[in-house]
Image 1 (spheres, helix red, strand yellow):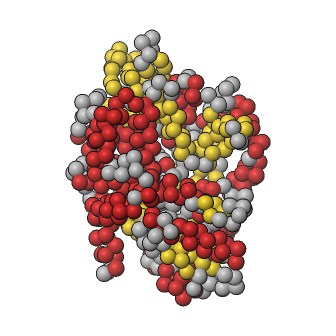
Image 2: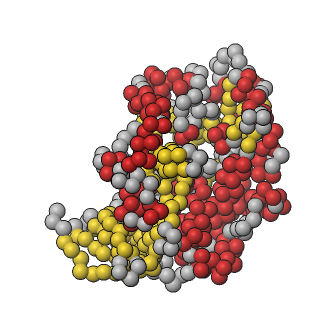
Image 3: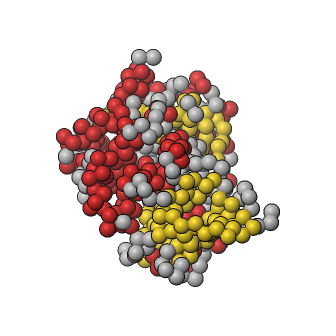
Length: 506
């Protein structure tokens, strides 16, 4: 297709790149704080929430640190450090408050279409792991955030909690689990589309089938964003004072194009995911929880095995995984050259350092890529002893790009597992890099972007932010009364209480 050059140079207050959960969150927050600002979004796909936020590309665990064992580390003295679990849980509470605000304000409806109550469980085997889980439970249960957690190493109790996992299990070693009923399953793709539907109806311009190709400074300090309209085959230019790069794995390339000093020495390591999906409704019906185990020795944190009940397009499903894989693409819809073209003179040493440090990870990913279905079924049978191969199919999930950067303690090329926001010193550019717990903590992360990029406005905006997020600026774990109020109100607004009661009466 021949490219045409648009003569029109449009000016806008904010440009959001990528129509995923992050841009949806930032766009809706800014619309509430400054309704008169002109905001444009550019998305290369045909609709919102189709890349990293898509229900099949995102594990859907409302990451609240209720079951993820990698958020709680055992210290040298045997104590359990739950500081990261507290941090992640409080951030998810912020997300739920925001979603409740959206529902109460009639900005979105039918919350059951994107969030459902679902027990979150941790499951371990072996004397040492059972002891770890017990200590973890004792430490967490003392905190108001986790006080509803239960622990059991009684096989009869576990049969009630997880009958599919306990059926025909040979108990030749200790087994234990924790369970907390306030966990959730979240369809971030559905949530993203709901928010963008509202925003489009309220004068936030969303341009689908538009690929951002370049971002450059103008002589007056603004940003010129070069966009290709895939549908009409033309180049457009848009100028703005603030750019948010929320393009999933594609964010690194766009951040590099800005040339801001903060973009230097960052690299990305792509990891793809795969899940086994159960196609037997009788098996699906026997399990109702998200059950997380411990990652195998040498496996990266994002490969913690879990057996998940999911609600996808209104249908109850059962997934096991994730099985890691490797592709040089930075997006599921990306290019095979993504990894190579991300290597620049300023991050070459960083990338080489990461390569040297992560030989074992590379070996692990290669093993995962070449694993047969029989090997994957062996992993499933550690959770479901009598799992049948014909009941399970392989589905390719999302593409994630783990952050590689230089750190004071880790030196050159340290691989980071988590979510990271990179902002220019003048606050005119912000980019979201990394992966889990990402979507679950989107509201906290976008409030952080607002604080860093619009410090001159935050004081004026604070009353409205506190109306939207009642706990803003406070620690819920240190304010148990406020925590109880918020958990009760968000559960009611999001329909979590009604859905749980309905499940028990049917």
